[in-house]
Image 1: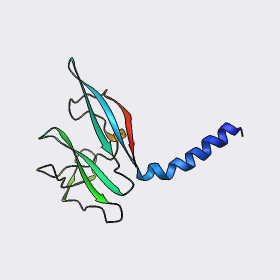
Image 2: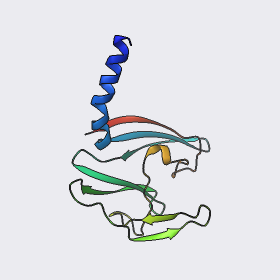
Image 3: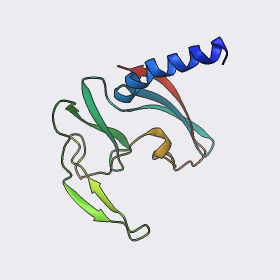
Length: 130
């Protein structure tokens, strides 16, 4: 094992616990026809606060539901059954949305840009939040 491998392993051990509770802000770039759209979206909250991310199709804005990590997470407002997959999906009341929404757990789960329906959107970490 080289010294570089050992250093990378130690670095991973140090960052592992931090990244489990820290969040990230992503810069997303998407195409809407000829027009390029760029925006930021955050996932994960902070070390003290947990956060769900949702997208409100009525306002075309990302919305966030936060709570202190020491408290219990919010309970779903309702659940719906997805006829395509057979799974039951929880919906949550987000403060800035009129209707309950699904949670987008992370940027990797977002397969389509909700602003433009672009399946080839690009995202990169813009900022880590602690």
